[in-house]
Image (cartoon, rainbow, N blue to C red):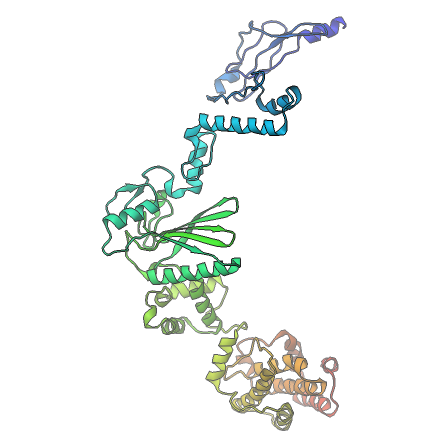
Length: 517
């Protein structure tokens, strides 16, 4: 080794982390960490078999030491080799395999023994609720707060009646049943199991039970937290009238009227099986259905009425009729105008305006109200001839007569098992019926009749335009008809009649009729 190499070897240092940071007065230069780490220099002998020795001649301190935060180091338990009793740390198993010839089975036994020894050394850091192990008290506290919110600390829940402290909502229900129950079975904690061969069937059974219980007990269970343990999924529910956590007490309003309530539910889902532990009785507040939240079924009822075009007063009257005398405990019965407005805003619906997406129940109810589909001609040929004979000779058609003609046509199409998804049943807007007939005609009628119906629909648009009825339509025609309507309204009545007569004299296919327009 050269002299220069020996000089460089003498300056080699090994950094070790220690509570303080020092420097050497000689030529040795020492680097220090910025945060809480410090270093100790090492002197190295020259030669091929160099040996490093710690240096004790360093007294200089760095100015950054004053900026360092205090750190508490918790030493990990040392791992000793069971064969030679040397400290090996994380390389213990490789050491046993390479140096002592341990097999995999023997190494697995050593692992289990070390794991048991580690658990015994930190037995106070085990969660007493789920049995999980943690490396620090802070981690254990965070675990309890996240996954066991009802028992984050011992005796942290107060009884809303007598203010006695208990450990969990389950203990709170048991305390209320023993000390405050006014009749047998009040505040009783129930344990139920819902299972089925199919996973979705068990979920549906559980949802039906939950809906019936909430309606009968004037209750809404709100999800508080979710925990996953392998294949199990545990969901914790609390009463919606109780605060989320005590620190939100300053935000308490009329709906959140109590700190704690005995109503709770814990649902454990595992491979299609639902295990429920719950209490459905309230403590600390009165049963008031007006302060509950809307369930999905009740909101769907309001949405369907909004799509039909009813105003707020009509909706409030209809929901009371839907609930009936036995439905006064439901939130839907006590709906307010603000509730209707909020639901309309969430679903982006305009109050008082009919929307296209009407379901079959709405269409059937509208058909009964109008009564224009009572006289049905079963034969499609007679309906087509009837349309030809009437529409060609009429320039101005009364609404009732037009509704009868179009109603019979649509009834025949309905008998062909076609779903009319956007059929309009308003008394003053029979044009939509013709639109539906034209849209669904090519799917159930041959080319000749489609051309005829298409011509009738075009001619009818012109008549309505002259009668100024198209301005009062609740919505524009379907996309398949919108282009034809816009094109024909720019024609004169004579030109439109000429196009129609040509289509009657020489039946055309659908594409040819569209090309004429």
